[in-house]
Image 1 (cartoon, rainbow, N blue to C red):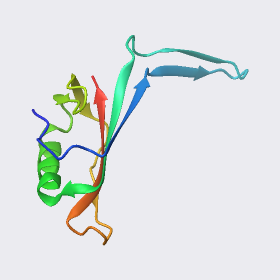
Image 2: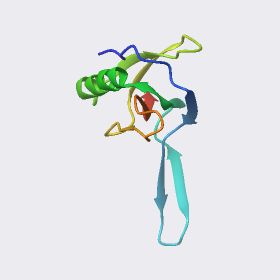
Image 3: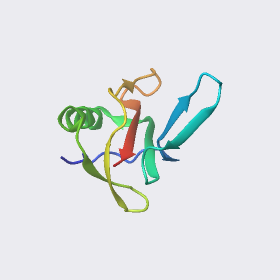
Length: 112
C-alpha cells in the first residue's frame, strides 16, 4: 500500500493526540486514563483549489485500495516518513466555479 504521487497540499495541519478513556460515576466524579502509551500525530492535508482531476482520481483509487490498512506517507517538507492510516471514511473533492480545473480537498492521516 502506498501513498500516491500528488501535487503538494497548500497546507498541512499537525495535531498531537493521545487517546483517553473516561468513566463517569453516578456521584458525578470522573476517572480518566490513557488508552495509548504513545502520543501520535494526526495530519490534515489541505488542497485549496489546487488539486488537478488526475490527482483527485489517483487519491480516490489509493483510498479505495488502502482504506482500513496502513501505508507509508512522506511529509513533503520535512521528508520524514510516517506509517499512517486514513482518519476518515470518505474523501470529497470540491469545485467552486472559479477554478473549474482544480479541486479543493482535505485528507486526514493518522499516525499508527
